[in-house]
Length: 201
Image (tube, rainbow, N blue to C red):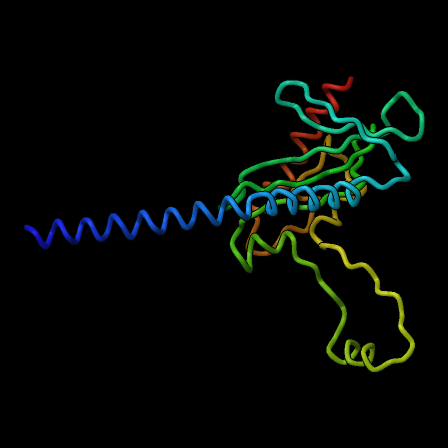
C-alpha cells in the first residue's frame, strides 16, 4: 500500500512539474506567437487585396460577420472586401484570407491557418517551383544576379478571377487525395463571400 501511495505521489509531482514548465514556456512564447500571427495576417491581407483595387481598409464588425471594407483613394463607396473564411476540413479548421471586388470576383486568397494531414491536405499551402538543382547551382555560381521570381501557392492562385457567388469545387483543381480539404476551402469562401455581399446590398 505504501509503495502504491509513493508511486501516486511521484507521478503527481512529475505531472505538476511538467504542467508548470509548459505553462511557463507558453507564457514566455505567447507574445511572440501573437506577433507572428499578426505579421502573417498582414502579409496575407496584402497578397489577397492588391493596392490597385484599394489602398485603405476599414474594419467592419456586424454581429458574427467580420470583414474589412477596401476603399480606393478618397472614394466613399468600397471597391472591395477582405475576409477570413473558416471551415472544418479533414482534420482541422482551415482559415483562408480572401480579397474580392464589389462584384464578387476574387482578387487573391491565402491560407492563414491549417493543420491538415501532411503530404495530403497540407498541400493546400504547397509552393511548386520549377527550379532544379542544376539551375540553383548555376544561380549560385553566376556573377550576374537575376531577380528572384516570387513563387506563390498553386492551390490558392486558382481562385483569382473566380466569383464567390458561384465558385464550386468543379472549377478548381482539387488536391489529389485531399478532396475534403479542397472542398472546405471552396465552400468557406463561397459561403462567407456571399454573406458579406448580401450584407452590403
